[in-house]
Each structure stands twice: as C-alpha cells, then as structure tokens.
Image 1 (tube, rainbow, N blue to C red):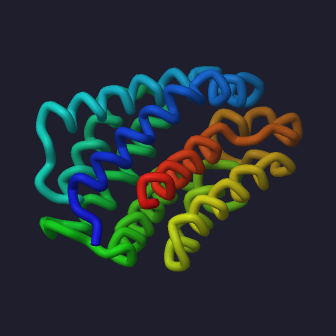
Image 2 (cartoon, rainbow, N blue to C red):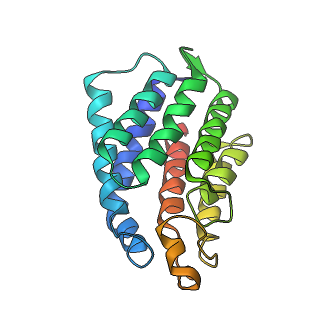
Length: 198
C-alpha cells in the first residue's frame, strides 16, 4: 500500500529529475513549441516541493491535489493546467484514504488522463503528453517498471508523428521528426515513480 509519504517522495524525486532534465526539455520544445517547457516544469515542481514541505499532506489524495493545485498556479502556458488537472483529478479519485493500492493509483491516474484529454481536446497519436501518459497508466497494472518503460516508449514514438494539437500543430509536417516535450516530461514522471517504488 502507498501512503502520503510515498507520494511526497514521488513529487520530490520528480522535481529533482525535472530540474536535471530542464535544459533537455526546453531543447525539445525549441523547434516545435515556445522553448519554455523545461523552465516552466522546473519552476512548477520546485513550487510543489515547497508546498508539500510547508504543509505535509495527510493522505495520498491530498498530496496529489496539492501538487496539482500548485502546478496550475505556478506554471504558465498549457503545461500548468494540463499537469495540474492530471494530478488534481487523480487526487480527487483517491479521496481521503490514508493508503491506496497500486490499482487505486492506476485508477486515479486514468481519471486524470481522461481529464487531460478533455481539457486539451486531444487523444493518443496527436503528439502530446497523452502519448506517454496513456501507455504508462495502462502498463501500471503490470508493474511500476513496466509503466516507466511504456511511457518512455510512448514518448519516443512521438518522433515520427505529425502534431495535431497545441502549438506544434501550427508547424504541420515540420513537426515530424521531433520528440514531444510534454510526452517526454510525462515519461519522466513515470520513471521517477518507478524509482521511488523500488
């Protein structure tokens, strides 16, 4: 079972990884976006860590809800609302339970992914974060490691896709050949989840 401390460790580890990978995320965002994804995510997750340290959550649901709320308020562009929606919706599904199972986490994240799709009007194959989130959540039923691998493969699979949503879609065929930065940061979340679960 997973308690609030596990989720705090996950968010803290995610912040560290995103801080380390910020330049790469921004580099990926440069040719097809606003060249700010890495910096935005870095700022947002740093704020998440501060919030969770200042007000330690009592439950897994509270941890994800607080993280999502902080991302919405501190990250500009599309990333903040999308990641904030993902975590807030997952937190809402987890509710007030003091501990949750991996399957309950999967269900919560699945609801969050659905909400992201509705907010962005996107689906897998559109070259967005969903291309990593959907396979990652699906594989979570098998194991944390399988989820991390599936999300990573999903992010890599965005390279040959033509973007159909977001700023990259304005580039049409010129968006082909670039890995989606949102899918890449989503894969990092699953990678840190797998590391924390070891």
